[in-house]
Image (cartoon, rainbow, N blue to C red; front, top):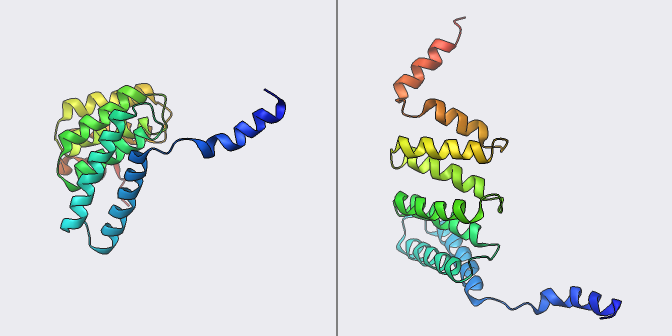
Length: 176
């Protein structure tokens, strides 16, 4: 191929890339969900129906195109929707676990997903054993990540009641 042929391929190639209808559907649903959130609120039936359709579309996309670069983002969003709007933290953990297993060290979203998984275990499932394990995994895999200080703090405070935390703060604060 000539030098010009390569340049033409580089310039025209992305424009000729096949458009995935499933990807376009996810993007459409994301936009629609955001508009409904802003106009009707998170408890409206239209919002919840669209959110559910979005979660299903994102999961289906991840199954059909497992190596697509948007899969971690779609799974993370699906997990956040499950935990936030549908009260399904266990389902959120399943989705977050997929990101960790499939995209650890391959996606910039993998650390956030792992941290969020630990957070869900701790705060939504009250499962301190798994929360501790996942925070420790986070620190092992991503010790220098911007969320590492929060993971360390969460580990130190894991299982403590608000009263115990307040007592510790009061003990540490010097009196004027």
